[in-house]
Image (cartoon, rainbow, N blue to C red):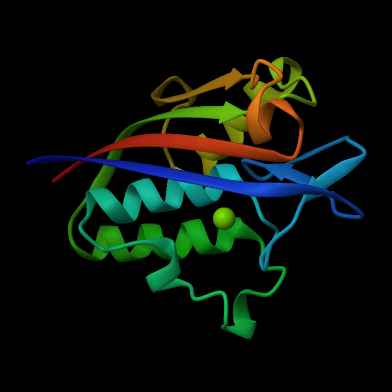
Length: 157
Ligand code: MG
């Protein structure tokens, strides 16, 4: 049996926060605002996993009113969701991730994000694809006000 899931997330870029995407710390003047570490990539991946398994969304599973997740490492949220889907007998087959950011240029860090996400979901790096797009200088992405991510995952059991 196979199931597909998709996830989307975006966070505002603000000064005074670290920029963490896919669990990788990226040198940049701004970072993403949010209750946890605001890692839009791991949040989109988590939502895709939960969606494929029919487990709702990241807000159901990890409420942002819960102090346990304040400034949380989103890898912990992802790993917790992996336990939930494995408990149902599902395992990830592959992930396709698209990150939308006008700045910084993500080309130099795409491979590091790929390898780190693959490590977290226990897949070979060639089963985790990372694409980076700009916002073509229009809209909230193109003006550099936010970074967004879309993720698609296939599960099997
Ligand atoms: Mg989020």
